[in-house]
Image 1: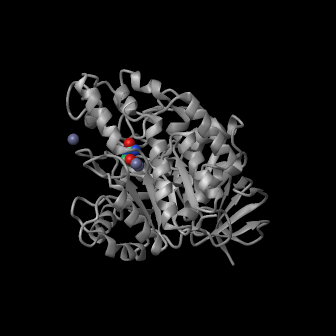
Image 2: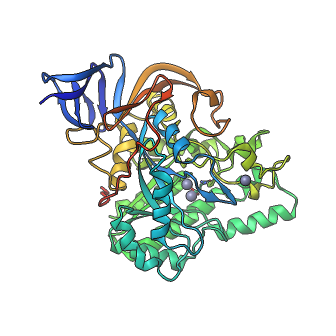
Image 3: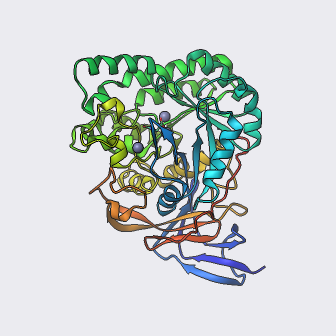
Length: 463
Ligand code: URP
Ligand code: ZN
Ligand code: ZN
Ligand code: ZN
C-alpha cells in the first residue's frame, strides 16, 4: 500500500498517553501509527511539535438569531476561527424560530453551513417550545444525526421552558437514545432581579452579574438533575457552560449514584473573572452564565483536573461592538446587551498554557475534554476524537514553545476585538490537518470555503 502522507518525528499525544512513531495517512484516514516503511507521496517533518487529535468544539452558535441580532460569525468566519485554533469539528446549535418545526430548522442549518464550513461539523437541536409536532419529530431529528438537544431554564420569553416541558422533553429524547443539554439558570428569578435593578436605575454591565448569582445556577442544576433522575437512569444529560464548582458537584454526585449526567465548562469561566464587567468595554464580556469570582474559577480548575468536568466547549457566540451596543452610541442597559463571547479559536492556547503548562491538568486530561469526550458524547467517536487507525486524520499540531500575545490581529473571527486582548501564552497551534488535508498553516487558513463535511451523530457513549 502506498500512503498519501506520513507525519514524521512528532511527539504524538492521545488521551491514554504519548505514542512513539510516525503517522501514515491515506484517503483522509489514519491507516498506520509506528515504524512506517511503506511508500508515500508526501512527508511532513514535525520535529519539536506535538500532534494531538483535532479539537471538537461541542458548543458553537454560528449565524445564531438571539436577542434581536444574528451572530457576526457565519459558518465561514466561525469555522475559519475554529480551524486556526486546531478545532477540526464543531457541533453547532440548530435554533428553530418560533413556530418552526424541527426538521425545517435542521434543513435551514444544513443550508447555512454546507456551502461555508471549513471545519467538519455536527449539529445539536435547540427546543424552545412544545408546539403541535415537536415531540413527534424528535425521532426523525435523531435519524438525521442530530442526537443531542439543548433546553433552556433561562432567557424568559425567549428560550426558557417551564419544568413540565423540560420533563416531557427529557423523557422523549431519552426514549430515543438522545442526549439532553441544559442551560441551567433560574430564569424566573433572574427576570425578577433584572426588573428590580432596572427600577433602581442600576443598568451598568456589572448588574448582569448581580442579576444572575451563583445560587441560581446551582438551584437550576439541582432542579433539573432531580427532574431527570425521576425519568430514570437511562437519561443522558449534560449541563452546558457550567460556571460554578457546586453545580459540577451536584452532577458528580448523581453520577456516583449511577446516573449518566455530565458537565461542560468553557475557557472563559476558567480564565476570566467578574472584574471584566467593570471595564470600559465591559459590554463585550456579557455572557450567560456571567463571569464569576476567582474562587469559582479555582473550583472549576480543580474539578477539571479531577475528571469531574467532562468536556470543554467554547460557547462561541460572537457579536460585533455595534451589535453588543445595539447600534447605539451609549452602552445599553445590561439586560439588552446580546449575550455571548468569542472562543472557538482560543480553547487550545488557553487550556494548554493555563492548564497543561502551568501543571494544573495533564496533557491526557486536556485531550480527553477537548476531543475524546465530546466525540463520545455527541456520537462522533471513533471517526472523530482519537488518533488510531481507521479514524479521520484530524490533527492540531502544537508548537509548545511558541509565545503569542493574543490580539485581534492573530485571530480569524469576523469582529475586531478579542476578550483575551494582551494575554500572553506559550504554546500555539501552528498547523491543522482535517481529514488528511492541511487546512491551516503559518497563520493562514488555507482550507476552502465549503470543504467541511456534516458528520451525522450516532449513538452517544457516556462512561
Ligand atoms: O451568553 C451566552 N452563553 N450566549 C449564547 C447562548 C447560550 O446560552 O449558550
Ligand atoms: Zn446557554
Ligand atoms: Zn451557548
Ligand atoms: Zn443589529
